[in-house]
Length: 333
Image (cartoon, rainbow, N blue to C red; front, side, top):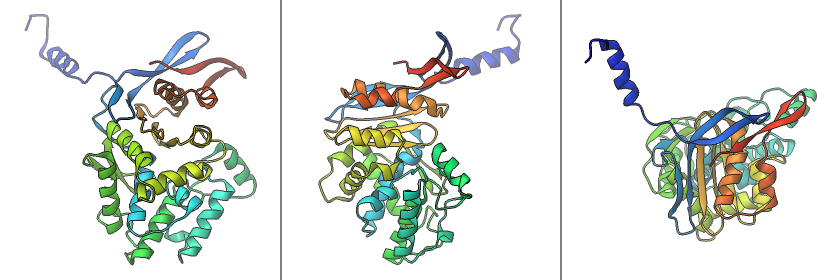
């Protein structure tokens, strides 16, 4: 140690040099031609044979996929013996917008299984979609469990418990038989062990896997044999994407306009998608910036060889100044 270096400053130098490298920049915020911000994160692309085509950042470290786990959760419910057709199964894997047709089907599913809204473990909330939220509030609506974007998943979880004769109370406990079955379903689809268990925003157990494992899971769903729980979930989501998301959502547009695509967003800017031949992707924007999702997703799909007009629409993230467009959020890889 030199005479001009104090022990405190030496400690700081050691701390800085030992810090993990920052993730790469996935998106730039450009205003009036000036880059005023950056969104970092990690991303993995898989080829049709399952090999890694591109890895940016640490794609083997565990992350909380948030609602990207919902297809695996829905498959676990089918394994428990729940039999949901069409739109109902899509809604079980949904982060729905809270539109009237979402709320109506949740109520029908509750009634069909002898359940009440008060039994839902998700918190009361307003519709996720901004336009629907304004309409809902103008009509006198208030926060409710049915309007919450995860209400379809929670309804299906309760219905699976009724079907199997499992306790309805405590259905969100990680030790509940349904949650243990879902845990196994996530691990099998991802091809790796769950690294950590937390609590999602809706109150359900949240299982951590890597981005590579998440991409593998979506790949396994589109390639699964017809009639298996995984393929049934994938087919329902692709046939009824408006029930998975909503009428104005990117997941809906992708699954409508790219034949055979499976796509699901999660909170904190997590996204996973797979194409019918097994190409797949998963990424997480580190700071959770939703505005970076579209540009990053569109760029990732183009790198996987997708060429479709819908990518131009979901990839646009304009910035406004004085009510007019003066910049954009754009992919940076």
